[in-house]
Image (cartoon, rainbow, N blue to C red):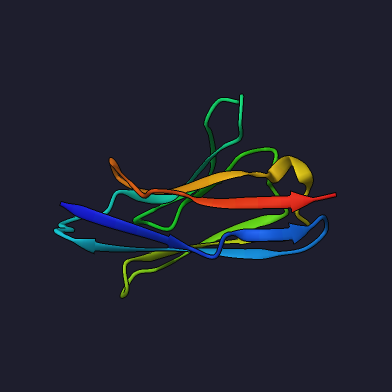
Length: 111
């Protein structure tokens, strides 16, 4: 089993920044990809950003230029730096590693 623990969520004003972190532990044999999804109330889950084992990154169009994903290979961690936050970024952000998921962390952006 793999456990994922997210941290860094919270309340921030529009235009502000937050940094999410996700630490993976357990039986990790290989990592194809890590990243973040988000889901706002009444909306579909959205892939925010992902990074593969080779370092290839992918972003949702809605966050390109504002968010940056990075990975700490030694510590099995993935980070999401979120800048220029907007109220529409408000959601529960969940970390994933291959097919494993974290519990999620709330990000709330006030206008």
